[in-house]
Length: 78
Image 1 (cartoon, one colour):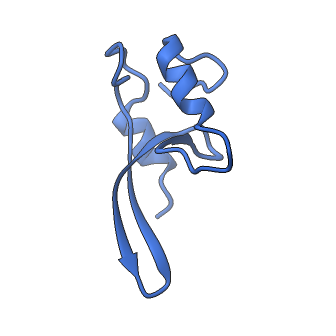
Image 2 (spheres, helix red, strand yellow):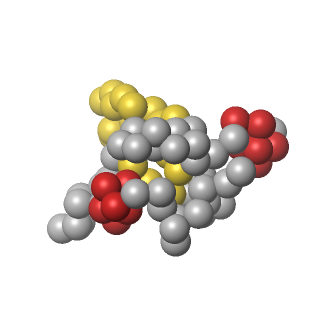
């Protein structure tokens, strides 16, 4: 199962995926290949801010399954 950014499971997730606006970077975002990701950590590096992100498998608001870990593994670059 893949995440469909055009049809999120609930209104809250739809609002969050839309982002904060004003040029701010969202903590929850959809990649070019439709994988829903969440930033879970940040670190200052000599090259600037480094972000650590992770795929979101279940909606944090309503609990619905959004993505399948096996499908994401197949999409991952090796």
